[in-house]
Length: 75
Image (cartoon, rainbow, N blue to C red; front, side, top):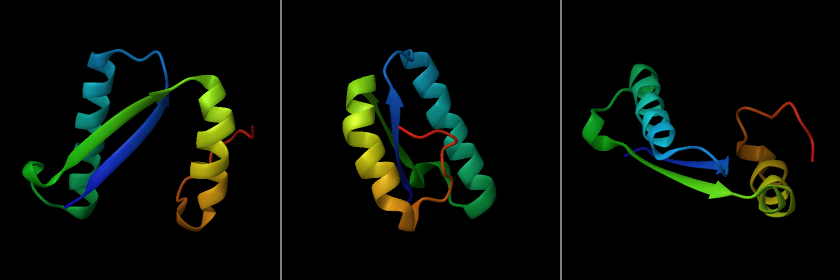
């Protein structure tokens, strides 16, 4: 059962987050299958300070072994 954890810089509306979750599920269904009922999505907001001090070093740079899309920026 796929579960997606999305981390964003703060500032996106609930509507944008809902649409993002829906589009991620649609894309995943096209690639790996499963019905809509199999998916779950969480979306967390972070400040820029949290991003540069925690998220980027720990979740992005620190997990290169499972990072399938690298960002085009460095912090």
